[in-house]
Image (cartoon, rainbow, N blue to C red; front, side, top):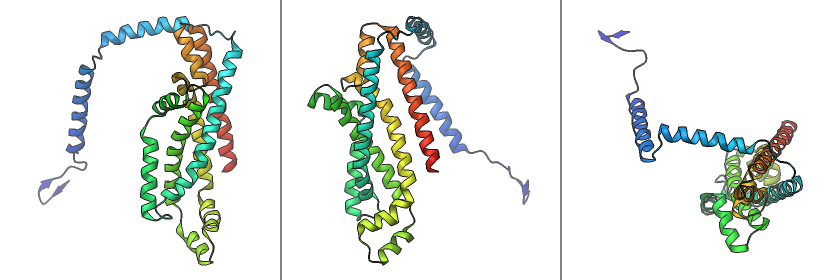
Length: 261
């Protein structure tokens, strides 16, 4: 292709993107060297991993009562934390939505939501274990804080995407704030709210196994104790049980989402 005697390329090279990729590759190589990640260490690690997996097989389900007790406690922690987190996130999401709340209130609420999301839930669980002691209460408190921050942010973003025509129409009738929320806001975001809530429940089922490792109840404590005893066949049984629980929860949540469409 030529224009005024000059040859132009149909797809000119993007030198900015190419430079960025080269810089990323150079930094990745530098990071590998700094972290001492070498082929030799990877080969040794793969061999050790093979021996470790060999000690985990076959899984030992003889202590199924202990396994079931830990799974039920993790399930209870996940359900309670999800319910509390969602209940607390709903008013926070409304106050953080900039199309509904005054900007000072939305700004302060968004700052609080960011604070709730700034710390990893395992770190929060450690803080609650130190504050209120070992057990499921610390796990529920930690996952409630994590759920509240995550769901409130999603709720606020969903509310900001609604059509304000319905809201203004209901306001024009002289309806109060409650009626505006129930008839103007909730119908537009209800299905998304349910989807967010189901996703958070799935996430808390996984997270409840981790907070137990730091003493916040659930199957994680049983898993950590089995690791300390080098009881790897029981570790395999616990891991398979956790995977089965997550699969069942995923199937149930998928069915619920399908019914809501």
